[in-house]
Amino acid sequence: MRISVFGCGYLGAVHAACMTRLGHEVVGVDVVADQVASLNRGAAPFFEPGLPELLSEGLATGRLTFTTDAAEAAGCDVHFVCVGTPQKAGENAADLRYVHAAIDDLLPLLRAGDVVVGKSTVPVGTAEALAERLDEGASGAELIWNPEFLREGFAVKDTLHPDRFVYGARSNEQGERAKRRLDEVYAVALGEGTPKIEADLATAQLVKVAANSFLATKISFINAMAELCEATGADVTLLADAIGHDARIGRRFLNAGVGFGGGCLPKDIRAFMARAGELGVDQALTFLREVDSINMRRRVRMVDLAREECGGSIVGRRIALLGAAFKPDSDDVRDSPALSVAAQMQLQGAHVVVTDPQAIDNARKKWPDLAFADTVEEAVKAAELVVVLTEWPEYVGLDPRQLAERVDAKRVIDGRNCLDPTAWRDAGWTYRALGRP
Ligand SMILES: NC(=O)c1ccc[n+]([C@@H]2O[C@H](COP(=O)([O-])OP(=O)(O)OC[C@H]3O[C@@H](n4cnc5c(N)ncnc54)[C@H](O)[C@@H]3O)[C@@H](O)[C@H]2O)c1
Image (spheres, protein in one colour):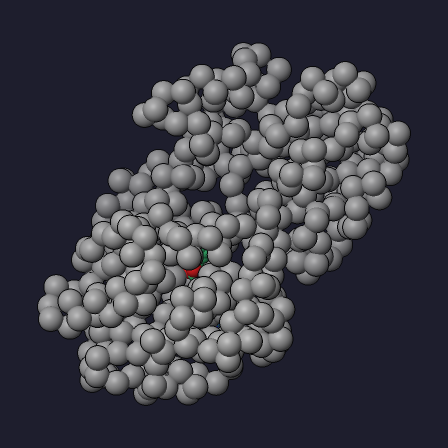
């Protein structure tokens, strides 16, 4: 099939490359010329394992191109909308201007029978408004909402082999036809038995924010338990292991630490609360405010713990921070807890050096005043405190004996509960972590 993908960031670039792998002919449209040029050279503009290879493969087939000219999407049968929906400045609500701009660009190109597939995460009610815009434009095209659940770091696998599909469509003939068209796009994964849930537009939009709210709640739950553990001398990692054995609870997403961040969870729960307020059901989501607060408190606690470890003040102390990305296997620093902690420590007078295997360039753009080092060895040189803020495998596997030779004081704070405390203590380090004695 001929497919267009509007918005070629973390979601859209991966989606475009994966659709080419599935045999489709794909044109990716983005408004950022440098990004388009980079994608056309086969260079991913961000770090995502497997994406460069997939881009090169797709470009070589001649079935994958990227452009800034939306008109090149004319003639495509299916148009995916993958543009950003960031938090509005100074508000909790989502900024939908990019979604509407993509529809503005699409309207003159659409033909009867074409399908517009929304993948961006939007407040419930957005899809209905966009469908109306397509009707008013007499395009004859139909809108489907098909939320995306990919995880950065696993985006290629998650797109080629998703754990489920959700289609939201209007219950009429066009809606039915549009769904069958989407079945053709996803024929390979559907053939592998991937579950599919067909729903109305509202449910499909809600599924995504409900899923993210659940995950955020699970993380904040264990971080709230960490606060209790800190007050009582209990150990949150043992608590998580113990409750995680209950199949109804499960161990995943129960790692206490510095909390969640990134381009999705924080802004999605806030936009969800804002939308609930507009719908008059704000009470239903009051708990998400607490989820958000618990999450933000962990960042403050991290700085407090560093202060305690440094004997009451971090002013003038050399602190090495390992990690800038909001999670490992990504260079995404949007709302990254690691950078938030780094900035706070620097503002409070510490000499902070940040390192990360992939995210230094993005981090430097966001916080140009921070000092960065390319390697762990450089970052920890003469450090009086080492803090692990992103659980990259290379940090989890660090040899505490080797590292001890480079620092001025053997103090480590494990902000992700990802190190082996015994190994570090045996190597002479003072080991501290959130939620652990
Ligand atoms: N990143 C993820 O892991 C992920 C996962 C699931 C869902 N989502 C959702 O997908 C959407 C996109 O997220 P992202 O992380 O890819 O964001 P992003 O900022 O990396 O990418 C958005 C892209 O859209 C482009 N764009 C903006 N206006 C445009 C227009 N009018 N026409 C064409 N391109 C335009 C931007 O230049 C940018 O490259 C968001 O709604 C997000 O919540 C993201």
